[in-house]
Length: 262
Image (cartoon, rainbow, N blue to C red; front, side, top):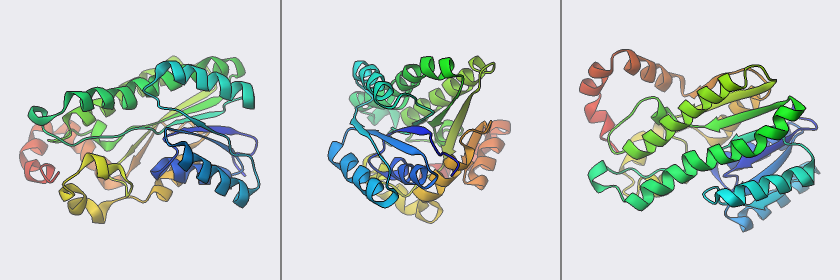
């Protein structure tokens, strides 16, 4: 029971990796604290967890784009629970379009959710974590933050920002007992592509490579309260991103057709 007595706040907990992570936290003896916009789905997940694991599973409605509400919600969580031991910044979405076609409202929304909301949630938990000198901040980024591809320019830029923030934060907290981990998954079999890939073409082309949410959630649980810097999934995709960093011109030239499968 690795997480016995630990409170784990999960943003974007109403589906996908966030939902899977909530169940894995409960399996590990922790208390999942669920945040998302869809309060009805949160209530269903909370009830299922409470019935299955016989533990309290609090939930709070939150759109991380609302920065004022972020502060209010985290103050309430700390008042209700006393301590936040882990923050899993999982909320996020993407839209796959070339720059010439990108909707600027969607561009703004992507950065507000993927970057600004993540930073706001992190800032909201830091004072209490520093005071107790214990904690773990886990930021779900993406392999897209390590290797850019066509039609994901804005999404990739937002995840690059998450990685930059995460790496800087880790150094800022080096003299504390607070761990900071980035999670960089490839495509996951979730509802993400319902928004990101309305044509369905990219999903079809990568379906056989897709990760299962439970698998990603297990890897995140394994890393909790360890100094693991990054979780990169799948391994072969991470190897490709490293190769791309060393030989970017070659990868852009050779991988062009594959990149355009979105």
